[in-house]
Length: 490
Length: 61
Image (cartoon, rainbow over all chains, first blue to last red; front, side):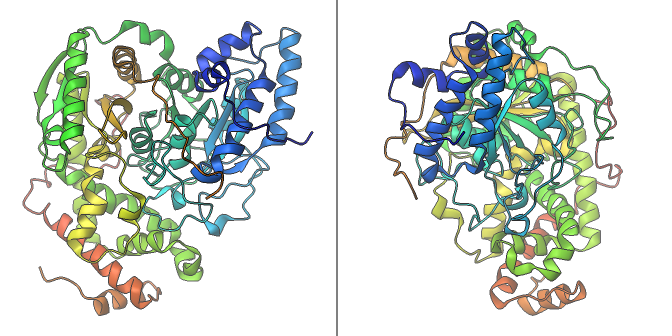
């Protein structure tokens, strides 16, 4: 059956429904107060009305989603429930394989790529009853720094002139603007946490090896990790519990049992020991509004019963440069053939980024690999004293799109644009530990600010309980982008 | 350390059978010089006491 948009919902009850968390929507579905088809239709309406400007989606699977919704509805009527996501629409970064559906990794080079199988994470969400609504926009090959997006310029729902963050740009937009119930992104050096921070959503990078990467186009294999991007911490816990765990198709996945992350939320922040990374909170690059919001969140967590104190990670300022050298050289190796045979099909920003890293001398690269081990040692060492480390996700709110599409004109500018802010998210990536970004405030200009919490390997539950306690205390999850000044099409 | 120039970068790229446009050569030069500075800043640090493991063995934290 063909889908025809009905127009944007103006009914506050329907608006509440699309912005509700997936956990709440699932409960409403079990109570027969909303049907899978109603929910899918509500999101397809929003996509039709808003996504011409926001450009969160590369592919919308409207007809197949409605067909799946009808099937889910019939099953529910018979009392058959597939799992906790029965009838819940989800969307995934277009870096993740979906059987029979275009999967571009955000690049023109893969404009015709239709994989035969689902990635493991997509298969697991479907097995839990989720309905695939579409594929989400991203910076080319999940690398960041794209100048011209081949599938449309993604825009921040809080201000369309601003960057939504990357590389999981569409995942952040779709979560924040309520274009689907839940999303998946992929985080190599902050690619889930950055869009979560810029868009006012919740984004988790799990422990390296906690979630299967089978069917995920690699950015940098040694640091890539798939993670949820949602509107609430509870939904992030819900999704993580479904996608985590050993996968025979990914030998890097952990055999460790997957805890009940949602149950862990009830423990709150009481008793957690939290170290505030002073180099990142008080550093010269951190804007005053960000510092103030993050310090306020630290005080808030202390009021909730956590033991919070300042601490130092002396190598942290090297993290951005070290990460970029290692990530980009890995990626350059993967892309070498296409860089030689199809260079003009890359976005200029991606091509220049890859080639520059491909020319780093081996001896310098080896020093970077040793520096990664030292940074990891410092992070893991701190996490023997603290349950969580706290920092801003980004030193600044979402920058204007125009600010980072101009050519690079000096090495100092290159370092500032490409290394500086990455020192905030890459310590967790280099150490292979889990980290979340959760909203902690807004600037005077109305842009979201993200709080980052980092934990020891496989301690996602500690992150989630603190983030959930903070989320409830701060009351920021109910704040929504107005989306009123968006023309229907860019 | 002296910065590389676009001609140096073109020669390095040629060793990988990559040819660069004039615009690409200029910007890649800035980016590569930024990398070399950032990684040179690691030289004084005590890095030789660790081995360059890419990941931490599970449970070692």
